Length: 434
Image (cartoon, rainbow, N blue to C red; front, side, top):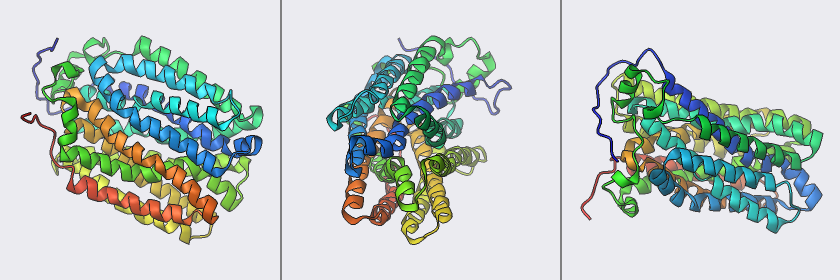
């Protein structure tokens, strides 16, 4: 049943800010989500030694995850918009946590491939859920900043993972990484199911704050039953294809960093396992800053009346894509470890500003009932294309003995995101005559 609501126009934010506590749920979930991805990159050196795996094998596991993750975006977005964020998200966290735990049980590559397929399928609803929850908990002018905060969890995970997971691995072995992170996800899923409430059911929201949330059409979770646009028709919009192609370019280089950064530091610069915990985490601190500051910057541009929410995000994405391309291409041309860490940090700062704004853009572009679907379709494009990058990077390194070509080509592809978001992503999705 659709609830008819008035949309009061409030010029200032209320004194109470309970809505921002919702971001904490999304940060914790995203942090666990990325721990479950980063544990493979940390465990890779020991897995290769113990189980006689190659870099191509490790790259293949990254690719298998990304393909599964990408393909499951399409049903995940539809399921979230159809059956609600709380139900689908709780099931998804249980699913991916179980898959994470199982990674520690096996010894053969075929078994790891199956488990990584399951992990990708289970993790698919995580970010579309965040986009959907943000769309009905925050007015449009705050969604960029809110999204930047919870999207930073995808950088907190890899930033904290190296020192945390390396310490666990040195004490208990590489299998313990998968056991511990799997159990953490199960506990979070139970807590989310028990305690999370939508705005209309929250007893913590004041009347003033609820009216402020409603001021730009938020406040209630809408589903596909209320939509006048058919789900399949989303692929007819140029804006949607711009988001798909732009995220393809962004996630290509993102996946190379996620899968190979620790291994690169160990092999090229002789970083020890004890040192890896520090060196591999530093670049992701730049990612945290980029996600949060990028969202804050778009909020300020809108608050000051300089531009609209959509234009602010498009401009930020385009500028950061160009800067990311320049920085990544320079990586092979510097020799010192300190300089390369600096370039990696800057690159992840710019890339993270792109991903945060891209997820917030889904809430501005899509109808309220289809935010998860549009966000998931964008993510589908990113990870379907990005799925190729770890495998291709692994092949390049195995064949050439160098990471240079992987970084140069990755930087060029990242820069193409600017063309996609600036020239194709312009207009919100509106109903078409079928």
